[in-house]
Image (tube, rainbow, N blue to C red):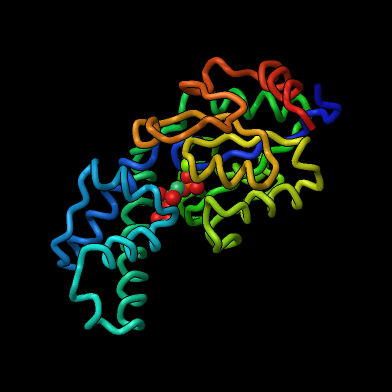
Length: 242
Ligand code: XBP
Ligand code: MG
């Protein structure tokens, strides 16, 4: 039984706070059309591409693995094009979220409120861009959404993306806690591997994009957080060896 008490929850964003990937997918395809690339990612392909964390990394991976002409495009031109595509994609995603295309998954807000009311700290550990987090939480929580979080780790703070533990290590340090005093909440195997590598017990809420992932190392796998309250989390946390 653990002697560490639970003091913080660290939330992933895409797939955990909200089921966002279908909106990310539409935004990628919008950017490809704007640039006249003729690429269209369908659900099946995108589900496979989600093994690559990070939108820019995903575009580069796809380009390198599908387009023989890549060799003619100089490195500068390649990264410039990828950056431009990702800018267009991020703008389209933000506009869609601001128009209400995404809402928080069941139970997320209640668990956050529960945790804050009982003196726990909250943090965010995501691969995505800061503007995407702000759009989602400003709409779901309100203009003061940042006040709920002690720390936010994202693509701007942690360039080495999941499954590397960088963003989780940053958050544990920012919380001034030990990994044993935190629980991570994730939706994907890249996220689970990153949190586990940072020493964090992890609760998984899969989405249709990640239901086939390997979650053997998870503390618990639940359909969503609608049936997970803080005393439940404390109970599971107490079972973890520290
Ligand atoms: C999942 C990701 C992100 C999004 C796209 O993030 O891998 O890259 O798919 O967002 P999370 P960007 O760690 O929150 O699950 O295009 O901004 O990278
Ligand atoms: Mg995720």
